[in-house]
Image 1 (cartoon, helix red, strand yellow):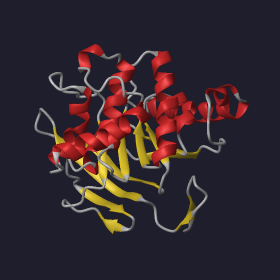
Image 2: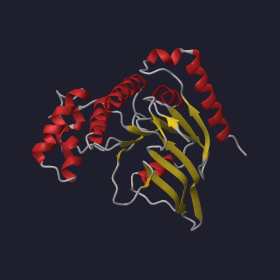
Image 3: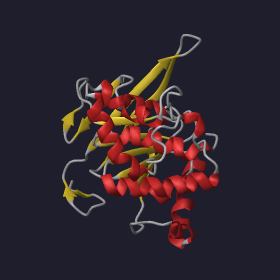
Length: 268
């Protein structure tokens, strides 16, 4: 089937396809706890896809598998139609916490992934310095994380993710710990960065409004063991501003996703 991505360019193959993914863990009592059970979803090239689901439904487990930090028990991962192997590194992962090292400056934190890849320190610093203004961090290159606001720390963490120059970004609730105003500002900032760099993004969130505002599509997961319970295409114009959040169309998407989540949370 031919799909059309957010750029309007037809693509016969998703950028990343996750098919029949299965994963379980050994529980404390020795029993087997299934977490993902035949989970299937995809993201098109340059698309921003959000994943919603009840707490404990396996959203972070999914990203850990895609990032190569964990191994699935079954199913397939494919990037541009090719199976994703252990030697492939097409993804960059931003976890829930910013994970900035307190003893390193912003510039040193941002360059660390490049240094780990073997990039010369001077070249890594030059690349980071070039990008700092685009993330509003040019005045904070020598600052240490403890001196930064929550929003600025998240900007630094996002830059550290983007600078790796991977085609797929995995963002695991990056704004979950921020206050409402800072979160809204970071959502707008993320959209501006996504529009500029046009990476494919898998974005985990518990916030329905955030999912609708940011996304091209939203997948709702069932309770553990997770499957996709609903897929919703968000047909709102881009570029988006916060004004779109007060439109009837936005409210309809919110209501649809809220009903889906409420249904998933309801007792069987």
